[in-house]
Length: 216
Ligand code: DX5
Ligand code: ZN
Image (cartoon, rainbow, N blue to C red; front, top):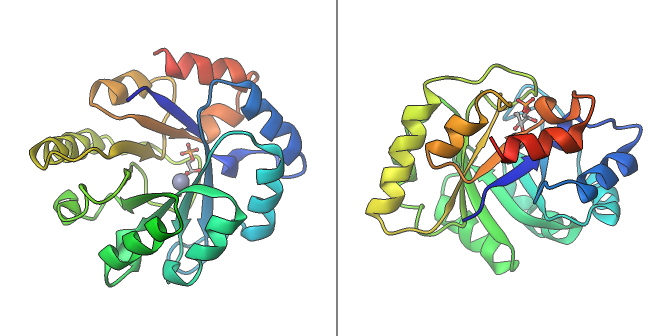
């Protein structure tokens, strides 16, 4: 699979979302990452359906929606309807991940599963051949602008080996603290999709930064 940059909307200018969507459209970002936080699973609240629907109107790239919410099963249909093309839920938030995977697939969209840095990678073993994407958090979910956890490289290696062993075809995405300095090492470790919030939006020329990150 080709390399993908999925800039995180969390670091965008919320007073000017249309302009930031147009920047994404004009850039080499293949996806737009959308962080939904409920103040319960994570100690922060971001945004919900009205913002996603508004972004959908202006963004031509697939919306890569990362749910950091309890009871994701209650809202799968609404996220699909709001325009999610990829819907990723946290393993920690559900009793029966397989059930959630099936519910998301039933909407005809791509499904991802994710874990925080303190959850052992081996919990993903039963699911890697059932999902389109595995997202490894490289910071604790909740805020943009945190520092990348270096131990994550070992976790990426473990996941990559698991995917090969199980002959699975899911892509590996990482999220949190990704920047121009660690992008190439992440790609070398087999990561397919880099989520980057502050490293993209807090630069003078985000379009150039995305291009640079892709070619590291
Ligand atoms: C954190 C979110 C991330 C966040 C990344 O909980 O899931 O997607 O926006 O932000 P940066 O790239 O600034 O670490
Ligand atoms: Zn995210």
